[in-house]
Length: 266
Image (cartoon, rainbow, N blue to C red; front, top):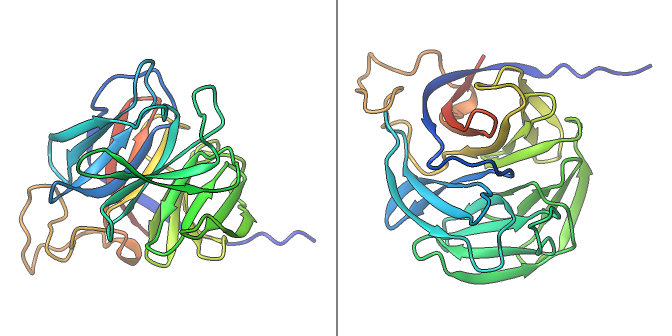
């Protein structure tokens, strides 16, 4: 007899959105929250016909404000996943096996201030669509399989994730990961052991378009109001209350060219 798991059902409370920093017909959009020249920023990249720019946007503003950009390293024009290493101020990037992806056997480190390619980790070839880093390990996805990888490139574990065949976005969160099951138009919370523990069946934007996910691990949301550039006071707390402190998540919808942000609640 098949056992049907009961996941916690979540909703997404949208607090803002930005249009993509540039119009593109590309694919494999990637996001991560990072520091850039001393300021918290959302790092955005999507494959364009001629070049891949990593663009930095100020976090949690009413309107989109670009603070800088640089091109992806030479010969790396198929980047499909980004993650941030605060201890080294590096943006880690991975490529898939698509027509522009040439380096699916590596994870590269890019200096978040200068854009210089400063590190390379050799790993087993995988058609990578998403990347996360929790400060200790990388997690990489090809859509069906999640791989846990150490800083030396050793694959420590491989798990087939039960979220369909299209995990296109992935971001590390304390104790869990947030993933986009793009094919099924869901956001899911995955435990450190690869189990789905919660899901959100109504992400914002055009259905089936969420290609990238980024959780804000940098800002202190005990000191930030519910809405961008709003006010914070003891009587003006977040309502509804964010689920398990998952305050602000950024979602890139490739179909409608929009970055949405908000948080999970029950």
